[in-house]
Amino acid sequence: MDLRRIRFKGTADTLRHWSGGLEALRGQPRRQKDLLDAMLELIAKDLVPLRPDREEPRAKKRRPKNYHLLTKPRYEMLIRGHGNRPKSG
Image 1: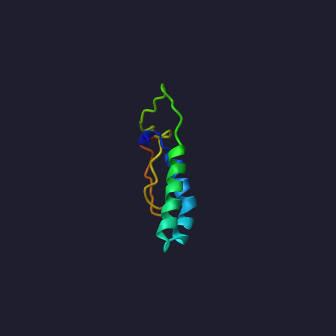
Image 2: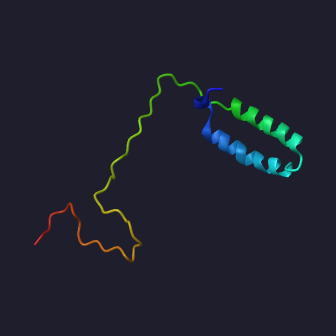
Image 3: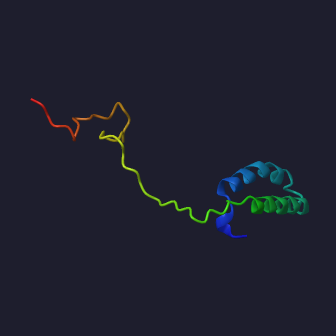
């Protein structure tokens, strides 16, 4: 199976759902292996659909507002003035 076609979210959900069953069969290696094989078959069937012309470039979006980022707790943060506004007076 092409690894780029396997859904990440579907795999994570399947692992979370089946982990209890695998843990319950901890002392029974044959049954645990059978359950693991069934789980891997299910993961291999859960594929991302083919999207031949789809492109998703990665880029950061700009911060939409011209305010300072809150990098400290509110009670410690002291904003001395807005950097992008002209001072009046």
